[in-house]
Image: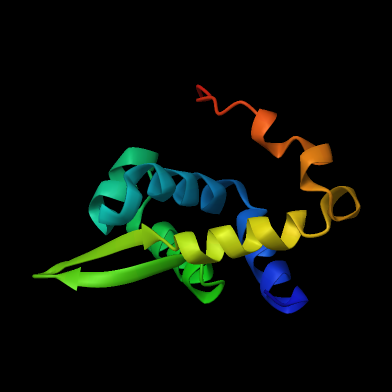
Length: 111
């Protein structure tokens, strides 16, 4: 991942609604969610949702596919993993064991 790609992804995620959309799509997994389902889950009007999905798509954080008459959005796990790799590359001088990234607990937050 190049600096410009990381900046685009981080910039897209540095907004509360887009971060919520992305986290919802990460939770949905590869199956993704229909646009209407995303809007309902987050209480977003379609124009607002469309704007934010476009920003996430431009940053390559989400992919979209058509199923019949529905648009299905899913998180781009490749881009997400590239971003995480970019942020942690050379962590602790290249000694990943010193960073103890595996010790970070995965937890669900309630909002």
